[in-house]
Length: 452
Ligand SMILES: Cc1ncc(COP(=O)(O)O)c(C=O)c1O
Image 1: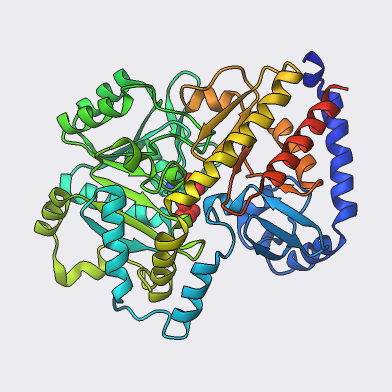
Image 2: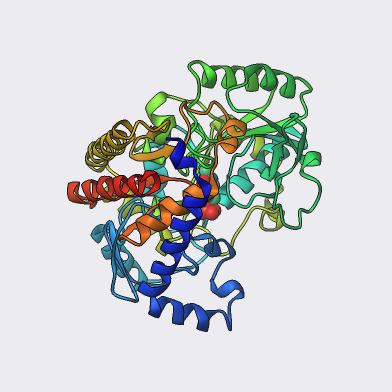
């Protein structure tokens, strides 16, 4: 194992993989050069410069769990648009609904009947009474936070160290090694120092939660039920009960963000484990990748909000979006919920995730690596540490960016796309056993190359 940490070997291997990547993707490189003339960094959105290659792969087409790039290479997609295509790319049922609706009108600023079907379905899945639609999970979080502040007349929110809930200004705050809060490293042009808007504590720390909420100045806690964005961090037994009890006893509202944890069950973690949040937010795969987000809330929240709402000013209150709730997104969401994100899909994906986990664990055992595999539903990831992290600070300390980059690029060069920023694989209904076994083989080769 000590040889794995031979950084010069890692540097050398990484350089080889970068060269291979460059040689194998002439058309993507050509497009990237062209793109650099009209898009900053040569990419349509800033974070796309963070892929493991020296430039992004340009995609020709995708279907199910696979895609083909402009150079003609095929890939098994374990990234699946970082959950946006958790349904598999362009599932037939959603595609048919999109085509049908697009011919009948795309956006109207008026509701369609599908919206009623979707809202009722969301009630059944998550147990919250009222639903509103957005185009992104970020907006769902932003609007739930606004509602919570408006109702409680409190200014602050509370988040967990190294959380991610989209580009919500208030959430870009972390604790340093001494436990002092400050802007997250890389926070671009914050409107104010997030310390003014936000309290941040470690996940799974009940005492810190009690202390932070005791001042009764926090409107709402925004939490993933299981942290996923600095790697998977499970709640300790009893943590969710404590979170609910302490938020209630201090008059603090609770938003559960299910955007990534929807891989737990058709009702997410909330549906499976019976959580009782005041708000629930979700986005990404809900409409198979067509922009769509939702936020739901309880009768009590609805009553309190309605009582403080000036209806004739509701379009300028900071909760909105001209295209939100558009007919196309809602039709795609209906088809996705009715025909794609259904129990049979979850069963199939879980079985494949078992196989993926077994494959990776087999290699870890064979080479006696001090690594582990962490799992939530059909989201599986490996970690370069021996124990599961208890919170974001511990998880962040275990990040080895160079090793991550190598594992990603090794995989990419052999036809496997992993989720960027961590070593996570998401399984789609169309992923096959052969895809999973191929990943185990490529993972083994990478490890072997590192320790040879
Ligand atoms: C838990 C969680 N919430 C919200 C979001 C924001 O999603 P979007 O960027 O689609 O708005 C993300 C994005 O990764 C997320 O992981």
